[in-house]
Length: 119
Image 1 (cartoon, rainbow, N blue to C red):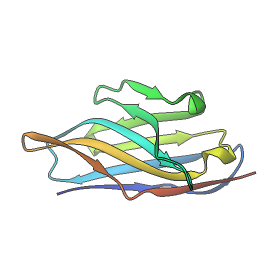
Image 2 (image 1 turned 60 degrees about the vertical axis):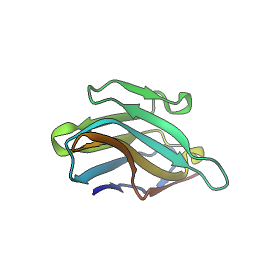
Image 3 (image 1 turned 30 degrees about the horizontal axis):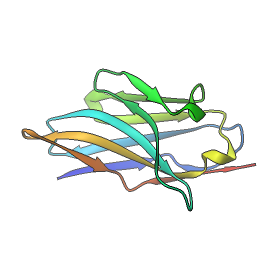
């Protein structure tokens, strides 16, 4: 069984910063791509940023230059540094990982962490 646990969310004023973490645990051989998603009330879940096991990254346009995704493969942990936060960044943030268990890769989700940005 594999678990992903996010932390680091909270309430912050516009212009502030937060750092989210996502720790994967369980029967893990390796982790391929990892990603952060978010879902605002009444909206669909959207992709925020992705990172490969080799460290290649991609971001949605609205967060480029403000958010930085990173990972520590030795700790099975992914991060999202969020700077210059805006009210429109308010959402529940979820981590997703493509985890290899024994010889099979499956996608796993965390439970989400709330980020609220006040104006």
